[in-house]
Image (cartoon, rainbow, N blue to C red; front, side, top):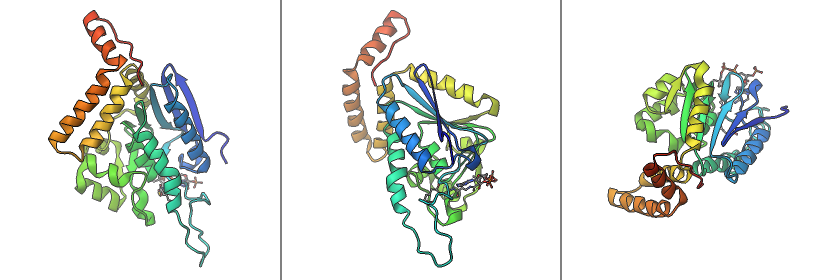
Length: 267
Ligand code: T3D
């Protein structure tokens, strides 16, 4: 149904991917999943990309799984056999979530409108979530008899605590961007008209920073979640050992003493 389910634009080292199924609030069908995975995989292997911005076309960001996609939707004919949708999670959502989780450069979600179901958790899995004030986040799963997927069980309780996470997931109510910022679910929200410019400015800033260190920071935060302080300190030492041997560290320190802007290139 879509000519181009994903739009792609590169400005310098910033790649912007726009989910482009506005008639269905950019919900995921097979074509969008395929296009997104291949664009992200290509960007991960492209030294010319140092930050990715993901946003949505039209009034929504992403309404999660396209519930009319025959590959995923239940057969609504009375008496029809239930469908195994577990495979869809393994085949589509898990690889997408893991790719972003391990991405070599920062990924920003510029949430321009409603983010529901897997669309909300897809956004929350990005490194920085910037949202328009009119945007919202909905854990829509409970309304259709499912659990939060696309990483929701892992991503939700961490930043907002169990009490907030449980209410969001069980009730499936709309959480406004301002409320999402207040409870720490997202980094911040901005005026609607400023969203794309702010996201691009942030992306250009991150693109000029030492990508390898930024990716190691994400990795360290996630690993430290399961560690005691002593183990975390050792893990930090290992990361500093790796980063200390990198071009970027030498460049960063040289630039500091030379009082000039650094040119980072590791990835
Ligand atoms: O196989 C599996 O299902 C497993 C995978 C699960 C992962 C998941 O993501 S499960 C959760 C799926 N998503 C949802 O349940 C959200 C469904 N959508 C909504 O609840 C509402 O659309 C919103 C709250 C997001 C927005 O409401 P509103 O009033 O602003 O817009 P609307 O009128 O409901 O939607 C606009 C159009 O987009 C509409 O089409 P129409 O009537 O204009 O032709 C609507 O049907 C379509 N649309 C919205 N969400 C989806 C969708 N079409 C297909 N799939 C959707 N998820």
